[in-house]
Amino acid sequence: MFNKKLINKFNTIKTPFYYYDLELLKKTIEVLNKEASKYKFIIHYALKANSNKRILEIIRKNKMGVDCVSGNEILRSIDTGFIAEDIVFAGVGKTDEEINLAIKTNIFCINCESMQELEVINQLAKNVEKIINVALRINPNINAKTHHYITTGLEENKFGINTWQLDEILNKLKELNNLKLTGLHFHIGSQITDLEIFRGLCIRVNEMQHWFNDHNIELQHINVGGGLGVDYKEPQKYSIPDFKSFIEIFHKFLEIHANQKVHFEIGRAIVAQCGSLISKVIFIKKGINTNFAILDAGMTELMRPALYQSYHKIENLISKGLPERYDVVGPICESSDTFGKAVMLPQTKRGDIIAIRTTGAYGEVMSSGYNLRSPVRRYYSDDMIF
Image 1 (cartoon, rainbow, N blue to C red):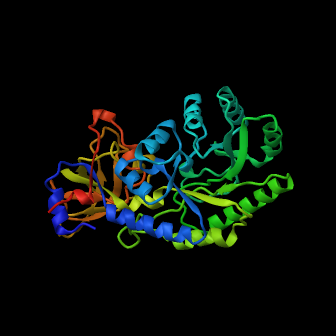
Image 2: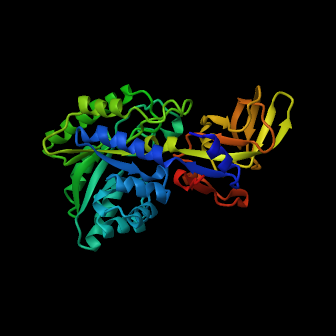
């Protein structure tokens, strides 16, 4: 991914910055679209993973829809050229302003997560004399076996409607004349690497479908969410996730009814591997038990290690020295501003270029101005003219 010419180019650019390999992004999308098209599955890109406009333009040109979780994400999607009928709107806490925006722009569907939300959407739609497509986000009570901060499908989580509430929901929907129930929505978590968990989701979705059929409700679409994980430890070896096996799980185990569409909302698996955070070593500080490699990038540029204690592969792109152990840290005035502890790197010195890999998802999009840091820059592979 990083040849000598590219590394030399990095050395001329002020760090820190995000570098995006657009060729890898395009190849990743190509593979996913190929697998999904075999079964006419519909892919919505989960915008929360990365809302960078250059990336969104590539995704739009490759005929994907988008999954949004805020009003501003809807606006960004429309501004990038996505058509309203390819936009779905999810989220547990939609404001009236955001709901009105979704109604005004005639998006494909609003995924609803509570009784009160249904009532509010109905009233806002009634105010403008519209009938709005909604899907019910069902909490399937499935353990995604991932980090507890990114598990979303258990009854203890804030997301979705619990199955024991469904009778009440259906009774209420009979009164909500400005809503049209068109589908069900499921999402159980993120960075899931055990595909058997998705098989369990399929079985649960099938059970829910039978329940709705028993209540004489035919659903036009099923949204099974996303959550497919990526390989953070070997990003070069596994630069494109195993979309084939992932998609085939749903083809094999999901019971799809006549004229019913299956939607996915995939984010991380599309964009994670194409992005790297590029930084330079400011200082090497000798410690009692370890050395500290202090970078000019910090948790303001990449929040995930501080927030989730997540692992990212860290590479020294300059040194060919013997391996030494370092705590790789940032400059922010927080002890949590640490990218990795006891990281084995070739002997590292001030000025060396460091790449933190697999940061295309939840990297740039979660960056902040804490400590009055400057906004993080970004560069793209097609910017690198040698």
